[in-house]
Image (cartoon, rainbow, N blue to C red):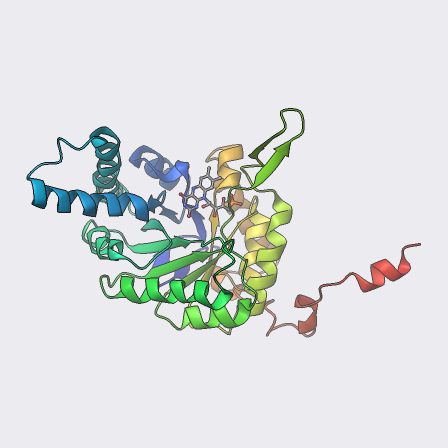
Length: 327
Ligand SMILES: Cc1cc2nc3c(=O)[nH]c(=O)nc-3n(C[C@H](O)[C@H](O)[C@H](O)COP(=O)(O)O)c2cc1C
């Protein structure tokens, strides 16, 4: 029997495929279907820091005025608050109806009071919390170090309120990536998720306006993930999960081989339906059998930078030979 189980931030996963945070993970019906289709764990759709702050503000207003009924934007406000209650209920229901780990997710950009809310996520039964963080470095007044400090502040604040494992999902836009990743891994988190993929702008030449580029990833985008997981394996004080461009079982195997403990998948499920999960698992099992591997744990990190005979291959950036040969 091929053993696909893996240990990810202290959690036992029956296999390394985690359904990534997205619209696919925002209802208990879908979570149940993801479990039936074989997902090893799920990350729920992110709740936004802004939504949590709305809830905190409402409690304050209620304390001051007795009721929030007269406030003009009550309806919009109610909708947002309602989402928070629904989110906690989603965690409870998902835990009740499935047996795979349920990882909650919060999209955040500051270490403000919202961090206290994490304790309610823990109380609702989440097995872990993934923080989805991206601070756009578009403000010329902030240096890289100022932005990086916000990550550490958020982790420190969150860790005061919860004991469940915390994962941090980051972008690849950091100038000192290895140094930053190592320091993050030493800040008390249990996993780094490399990397998030964001909304991208495009230009519509006919309508002469800015539009949204491709919402879903393509398999080429995984190369950058492979590079960084491979480089960081063995250097971090926490686990890693791969995210972006994972569309088949072979790509999962590659990400494990460079050092990921698990992978997060969104676009492939959106494009092909949940049936892609069992296909991926079959592909993994067949490859492992054909290559005499009995368990996923034998694969993790086998081809990381520290394990290969030519480690510089991970750092090669220019196509020197290619350019010099091309006439
Ligand atoms: C429609 C859609 C919604 C998403 N929503 C979230 C979200 O709420 N929180 C989050 O952390 N990531 C979100 N993501 C990002 C995915 O979790 C994932 O990191 C990213 O799509 C890269 O993985 P993929 O190549 O498998 O799609 C979303 C992605 C898509 C396509």
